[in-house]
Length: 520
Image (cartoon, rainbow, N blue to C red; front, top):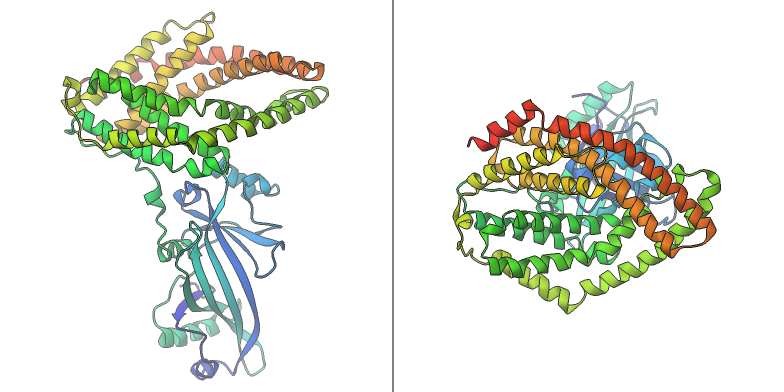
């Protein structure tokens, strides 16, 4: 063990100084209390535990009883090891990555979190006493720290509070031998070392299990399960996961709550649409509009969110002279967004919404009817047929795309790619993980280019609609300039679309899909 590495032990309460002094008297002449202080710690992560999923945690520490005072922000591994050279001092605990000043940590959190907010998941109140082990010349050779703390989770008003005390040996450079002597004595007195400050330990202590809040990836399927059974089970998991985002959506915590709600609904609608023959026609005709109603209720708010999220990019695309008009437009869209959010929140709190959700929850958990040929087919057999058929459909449609192809036709091709992606994701557990990752990666390259092309189209349509509403000359000039730039970028992207389609339908890719899915 590195002699400069700190080591900690659990103790029942603040140790008896006389007992400690006697224990260490063979190595040190004095044990003195140097200082004491109180600190408040918050461990931060996003609602979907994006840092935890990467083996990381974010810690904000400040002096207790000093609200509004600055604190230190530090990125840790789950084992408690610092992932940065120095903590970053901030005036307050950050809510978003853009609350941090320019730094490597800010860039790192931007990649990890995107538009997701941070929230405290564990809080720790600490009282600390710093002790010094001195020699006969009064030189400090080793420091000891006693910490008494109260630990509790932040996801509910009433949660258990855990009271703990531990002692930490803090070696000093140049006095490694003294540290080794102290460690031997403390091991003898206190027994097995502990890791009290690791986020991993604190999660376990407070009963927080992030994996239980996340969807299994991939969704577990068994090859011989009847297709309708697999559909209902997947629908149940995805719908329950979608509803996790309702509270954050209602309180407008960040835009990702609405986005993830829609993503999970879209996954349900897509797999049921692609496998609708597994249900009797009359059942599907009742299910389809119920799912559609939930999705449509969120469309307006999401459209406004998407536009507002592009604020910085759009501002950078225009010359300075045009930006005041664009700022006016953003302010107006922000007002519209507040109204749209209030309308959606009212719908989510209505009995109409709750009854629809209750119907869907009942449907997903009902025993399967197994009333159609597809319903009883083993899901593995259906998987290969559906994936291969969709791949071939994309390749065939791709041959028709030219420089003159209408945007709507390119958009339809993008939808077909999304359907293939949903199939690959849904059936992923039935195939080797390496194979699935390879095919998803190949498809994602095409989806990214088609998505960029579609974004330019949708953005132009949105701005054209604004021209009909916002008719001041200042706003008009900004909109015309922005539409012109977006159109130019869309034209450039079309050439990439055709090349990406050729790559996706290349002989080796075709042979790979055929071998994996057609010949089962």
